[in-house]
Length: 317
Image (cartoon, rainbow, N blue to C red; front, side, top):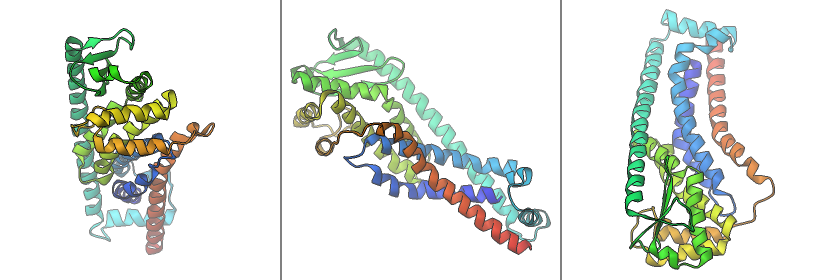
């Protein structure tokens, strides 16, 4: 019971407060991979903590593993069995029901959304191979579509592909290479799946900010991460030239073809603040992101469990 309350509070903190510090991670001097990984790990931890609430109520780790002082265990067992506090059982039942309800909705909605994403992606790839023109110089997975200007986008899934408008062929070779590097970064980073996950979680629990705000941030961060990869391969100038060329023709606000016009201006600003990565710094990106997500959960659970255990031990004593 004490562990379940601690996990419930941790889920609330992570779900509602995490966007306040996760939003601070995005900065031009910092690799977008750090913020992207932190958002994704925070969302995954939120789901995991929600799932852990009914699990610990069933396992009762304090009873089985003797993690708490004997006085605290006696207090909790007394409250549960003797009915000293009438609402004790009601709180347990509420935590059970809320945890299972939220977890069940997440599992059902996210599973359906990801299956739908997979089906639509495969259908899109099949149609593309019928109407698109494959290229020899760019690779078998690159297709040209007539009348798409300098638009470019990629399709993930089992048959990944890159789609280029005819206007891309008129770009400077370095800018064209930057467009291809950007889209290949999306494919190698599985960015389509990450965006699909974020959108699905948002659909499941739209009232939770880490899901609702995270869906927007993840869309932004995958673009910035692909820009950073393209800049490392082709140079910042080539990426800026490609973005500015697309900006000149952008009329559609969809984030598909190297993103919307207003966002393009922000991406150019980010490239201007790009710094050379420190040697060995990339090794720390994912551990840092995981720590930023896990530490608030550990701190919250520890504080709540310690406070409840102490109060229950004093009350029971």
